[in-house]
Amino acid sequence: MADWTRKFLLATVLAVLCFSWTIAAGTDGPFIVAHKKASLTRLKSGVERLSVSIDIYNQGSATAYDVSLYDDNWSQDVFTIVAGNTSMSWERLDAGTALSHSFELEATKKTVFYGAPAVITFRIPTKAALQEAYSTPILPLDILADRPPEKKFDWVSLKTRLMAKYGSLVSVISIVVLFVYLIASPSKSASKKKR
Image (tube, rainbow, N blue to C red):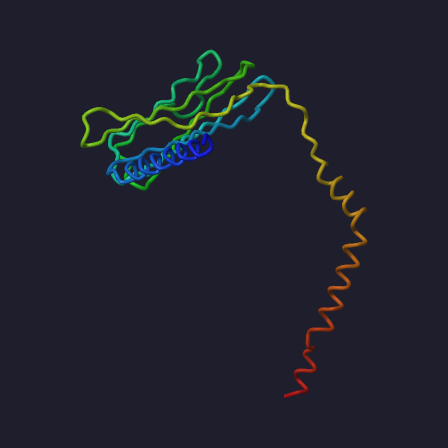
């Protein structure tokens, strides 16, 4: 009895979710999705450059107006702005289109930084209040972390080990395949004689 009740409850929840998604998809209006990415580059000892890019998509069915991006959660005691701005505004974002914004920061303090999502505000002509959307958050950044040196010759040693182990087998299979191909394919001189 409990198993049947659990299945019925799960089916009801799924039906309600599907119905709400259908209603939400049918509404006329902008639907803003934003993706925030960050990558660290070590410039020299004690300095790392952080490149941040935010892509904003309007996956709705109407234009969003007065679109503004705010990403001001970068601690000033850790980061300094090197290029670009952490805020940006656009007049509009049409349905089905995307915008992109990027900036660079420099960090000189060793820490683990947990970045918050960027905030996107926009206006819909049918509503008086500004609408808000949030970007995806970034993974924690381990700034100026002690990283082990990269092993650049791992692929070479792997290739050498594989060739030593399977090289003769690959050679034999290649020779057999070539022999079968030569036997099975008609020669050009035989096709000229038949004409």
